[in-house]
Length: 80
Image 1 (cartoon, rainbow, N blue to C red):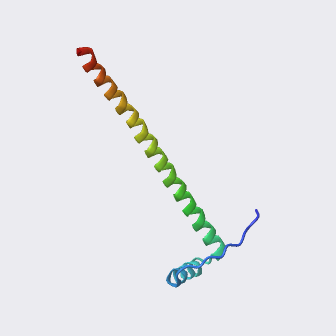
Image 2: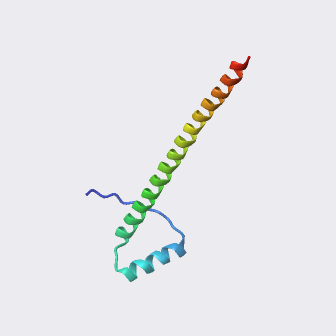
Image 3: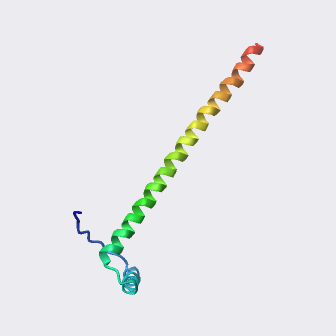
């Protein structure tokens, strides 16, 4: 697999926590950062999917609402 080097600045307390966990687990920085980025991307994709599903549901409810209003209007039109 091809790789690409990324450079990022993170707050020192976070970097120190990261170093401590990496040392305790005996892992490589690259592995931990790659897993963290993958988990973040997965989370963002899930959030976007949920947002799209919510919008689709709301949109379908709006369509149903218009159908109910059209039906109600048709009832009053039948009376005239």
